[in-house]
Length: 170
Image 1 (cartoon, helix red, strand yellow):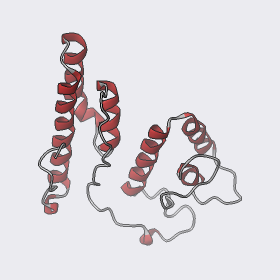
Image 2 (image 1 turned 180 degrees about the vertical axis):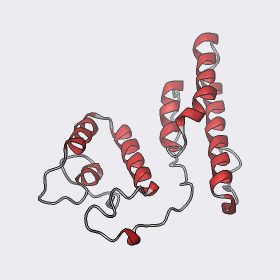
Image 3 (image 1 turned 120 degrees about the vertical axis):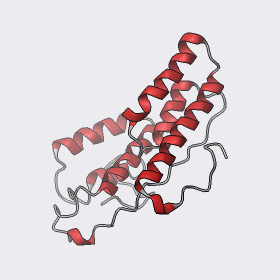
C-alpha cells in the first residue's frame, strides 16, 4: 500500500522510499525493489515525483499483487475510481518542447503513450525540422494530451460528465 504523501523512509527523498519498502519492516527488499530504489535515488526530484505518481497509478489498477500478498483482505482493496484526474504541473517560462513532453507525460500519467506518439512526434518534428516556434508547439501538445484525456474519460467514465475545464490552459 502506498503511504500518505509527505512520509519518508528507506533512505530516499519524499515518500518514494516508503513506497518501495512497501510496509516490509524488518524484511529485505527483493531485487526488483532494490533496483527501482537505486534508479530512483539517481533521478531528479521532478522525475522521482513522476515515478511515484506512476507507482500510485499501478496500485490503483488493482492487479491484486499487493492486496493478497501480505495476508491482507483482498476485498478491502479500494475499488477503481475511474480515470484519475491529471496532476497539474505549472508550465515554466521558456520551457523547451522536450521538457514540455516530460511535464505533460507526468501530468497525464494515466494516458497510453503509444496512442499519443504519432501526434506528439509529428509536432516535435515540426519544431526541430521545420523551425516551428516552441511555444506554439507546446500549446498544441497540451491540446493533444487534453483531448486524449477527455476521450479516455468519455470512453471509460461516461457518467463523470467530463471535466469543468474547456481546455488544458483554462
